[in-house]
Length: 190
Image (cartoon, rainbow, N blue to C red; front, side, top):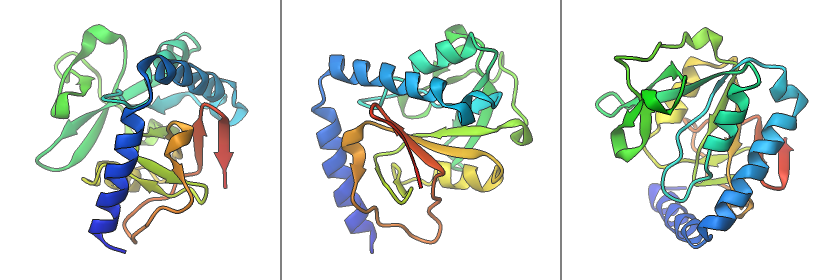
């Protein structure tokens, strides 16, 4: 397994994901939010780290807004490119977000409150491709793999469209497996 193989998969899956029409992506995103909020293992937890969508990813906003009304504490990561680190901050509304690294909406640290890593119970993890063995292929910088190492107690859930589930993802020793994956078709657990 090599970087070239991962790069090829990234390119193929991103190209495919980009062809999903915006209205279909939105419909699928709403179904994903419904599955997340209907799952008993998820709903019993309080503090959930989500991510701000960008490009042709699922739209996480429906989940964030609905979960916020259910007494869930949502947090979003602030990205530090120099250290390839994610720092979670509580989400308290769109007005606290600013355009950050890669053009992704992130918490403004001057008006947001940091989250203690020990408080995070669930991490919703973005990615380009996933497999049924709970493998994940991210964007290649390792932000989430490094973050997951810091919160080994948290339930790790990949969030994607069903088209992003492949037969097998090439995994290396530093790549972190997930506990579950949710698509518009439901939740898959190992």
